[in-house]
Image (tube, rainbow, N blue to C red; front, side, top):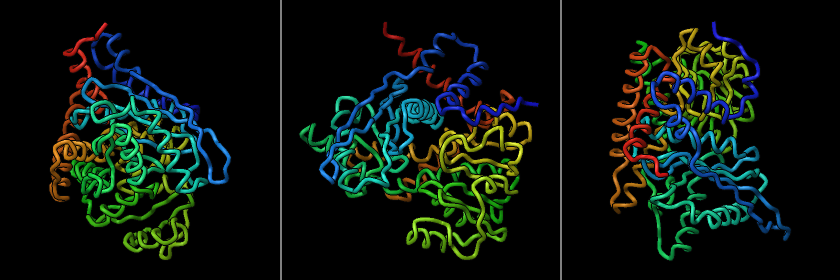
Length: 422
């Protein structure tokens, strides 16, 4: 039986990412120094951002941008606004982006950024000034052929519009391809907002097929009801799945007969929370993870499934909509119990895949229909899932190690072909 280590609850995102890398790397018979090169971030930037607040005072915020690897192409990754953002977290997320892009085979490396702030306490004008100052300080670090940001936690298409505009003013011409996740009117791609959730749906479909589970009527639990969680719940519901529980930061809902997701989405649009929706009973954040179901979708933040609660997970499939929701110790426990985990670097890669589509469309000045975008996404996600499953069966390992093995091999191959410039 795997060792239960309660300290994994306190594991930082970076420590978790490094453990995941190390477990997969042990399987590969390659030069350890080359693996160490792949493991380390290429560049980490910290910027101090003095911002004029609405009350006339100045407040200094800290911003980060990490480029983990650019061997396969420009760095790619979101920007998050959250009070807990720090260098370790951003470094971990940048590393995961490297492997995520490699798993789905798109020509990007990994990057990530963030600003340590509580956006709920900032006005729209303060958020705009903060975003523009952050962009101005990073104009030499980001760009269509260098590093392409995107939305993440507490950022959206408006944030990307401010970044694109600020970067374009410094460049003295419009540069739509500097970011993805933009408004459609500014060169955004149709289908981008739903892409991560849609990718989760495609991964769940493939996993259910492999596990001989009929998705129609299958009990699904969605932990987190932001963009990824709400879109995933919506699409699973449209596919006939029974969504028995959902939750957000305020609390959760449970109905074993299934929640009316269309009604819930309308309720959340008006009330900004799931709590209070009629037709379901309250449930706590801890309880929702322990419900008996076919599919559990953790779609919130990191480290929610740990050695403390992994024994209580009763799902057949865990589909990671969030980045890093499962610790390495929890992974071992879930594997020992026969629970299939679709790892984040595969399961939630729909967002970065359609971000790639947006970048391509911006650079060629020709845009696809939403149907074309969704079809291309499905082709890539289905292939990626089956590529990872094949490696999992070949090496007799879980899907996470298989995904890392596949990604590391792809990045290593390109690195060896390019050589190490010294």
